[in-house]
Length: 118
Image (cartoon, rainbow, N blue to C red; front, side):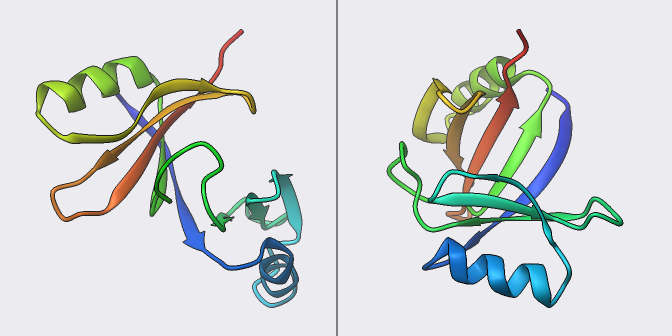
């Protein structure tokens, strides 16, 4: 498994309020997507981005970060082999990703994700 990108998943109470703040103050005005419960805001100048999450629509817990990998199936097998707690089983989500959640030994939940390649 190779890590491709890491995205902070900032917990928020309201995506619309978060949008107003993050678009205005740090200038993350480009909205890459908004599923109602999660949205990603990006700087049009630098490409830096932040994801805000109210709750996860299909998982029992909200992750702290999303780690994009090049082979999510291998990452899942490795996490299982190491005996890590799988919080959300490996699955294909309707918004175009394959992912699972793993709990790190420190208790933080990580969303390990790969975009579908079709």
